[in-house]
Image 1: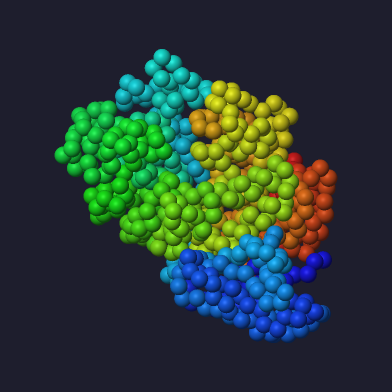
Image 2: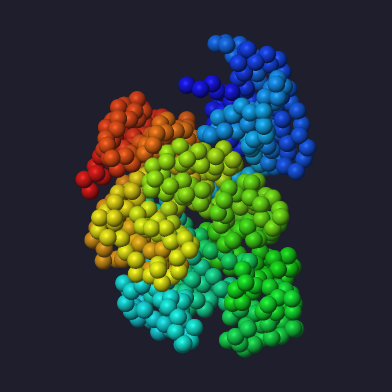
Length: 621
C-alpha cells in the first residue's frame, strides 16, 4: 500500500469532510515521512482571485516512521479556496491526485478545493430522500383524446408509436411542429402509476403557451399552452398531486422568449404590437436591437426564433420576480418551485431575485438550475458563478453523476466513476448536495439505454439517428446495465430523477428522438419493478436523506459503497463483471451474480432488524 500524505476524502486528514459553512473550524492534517527532515510544512491557501497565504502546520505526533502535522482554520468569507501543501524540503509539495490522495511533486499540480458557503444556506428538507420524475408534457399521456389543434400550424399525431417528425420538406420541415396531445389531465390520470414508482416530485418541461412542442420559445408566461389545458386545470393537477404526496416544479425559461410571442411578436400572431415591430412597446427594453446583429437583435445561440432578454431590465425583472409576477402566478396555482433553464446564462443577482420570489411562498419551495459541470467552480461569461453558495439556487441538475454512472456501466471503469462522484460530494455545500437532481437521461441527452448499449452519435446527423433501434440481444444487455445504473442512482447523495419512460427502457438519440410518446402498451415490466423496489428501499431508510458516502471497494467492473449517518447505514454492491463476486455489506458476506446488485440497510433504531436487499429477488424478475 502506498504512503498517504493526505486525502481530502478522509476525515483523519480533513475534518469536517467537504464544503463548510463560513466560520466553521476545519482541521487539516498532513503525514510526512520522518526521513524527509520536514519540521514545518505549510498549507498554501488562496482565496479565489486572491493571493496565496501560508499557514504553518504544527507537529502533533510521530509514529511508524511518519510525522503528523496539523492546522485549524476558520474562514469567515464565503467563496472558493484552493490549497496545497509545501514541505519546504527539497521543493517538495503535495498536490491533489486520484481519489483525493495527496501527490508528491516538485512541479506545479492540481490544487484542492474548499467551498465555503453562507451559514444561512438552507434547502427544502422535505425534498431530501424523495424521488423525482421528469415529464415532457406533450409526450406523456393524452387524457383528453383527439383534441383539436388550437392553431393550424400544429400537426396532431394520432400514431402514438410513431417517431417524432424531423425531416425537411418544401416548407422547411416539421421539426417541433408535431403534437401527440399529452396534457394536464393525462398526468392527473397517471398519478397512481407515478405513486407506485415512489415519485414524490414531478418536474415538468415548459408548460407556458408557446409555438413548438418543446415550448422553450415562450409566447405567454402567464398562460398554460391550450393544448395542455387551462390554468385552472393546472391548479387541479397540482391539487391532485399534493393529495398523492407529490410536488410539482416547473421549467422557468427566463433567458429568452419566442420571437412568436406576445412580447416580441415578430410573426404578428399577436397583432404586431410586440417589441419587434413597435418601438413604443412596453416590452421593447427587454431586448437588444442593433444592426450589428445578423437578425437585427440579439438571439439565443444564434436562433432568430429565440430573442434573448435583458435580465437586468427593471421591467422584465419585475415582470418575472415582482409581486404578482410570473413566479407568483404559478406558485399561487400550486407549483412547488422552478427549474431554471440555462442557469449559466442568467446573472447571479437575477437568480437571487428568483430565489426570493420562490421562497416568498414558503421555505419548502424549490429552486433548481440547469448546470452541466461542477456548479461550484463554474465559469461562464468570464465570471466565476456564485449561485450555489447560499443566495441563489437550492441545487442543480447533476450531469457529473450521470456521466460517472453511465461510464461505469458502459466500460466498468470504477475508479473514474468513484473519483468523479466523490469530487462533487467534496465540493458541494451539504444543503445543495442533499437536493441534487440526479438522473440518467433528460430531454437534452440520449436516452439512457441508448447511451449504454448503442453507438455514440457524436457528429452524426438526424438522418443517421432516425429509426435506430437496438437489436434484441443489445437491448437485453442495455436493460441489464440500466438496472445497475438505477441502483447507483438511487443510492447516491441527492434525489434520483427518472426521465419519463426510462423505466421502460425507451430508446432514442438526441432531440427529437429522445422525446417520443410513452409506451403505455409495453409489457416488459422488469425495470419498472426495479425502480419500485429501489424507491421502496430508499423510502424506508432515513440514511438516504442526508447520509454521507464512502466507497468500500473500487475495482474494475465492481463498485461497493456505503451511506452512513446517525440514523443508520446502507450498503450497495454493483457487479458489472462477467463473474460472481463476494462482497461484504454491513458485515455480512454476500455473493453477487454477474450484472447484478445487492444491497442492505440497518437503521439506527432498528439495529436488530436488518433488511436484506431485493437485489437477489430482482434477478429473477
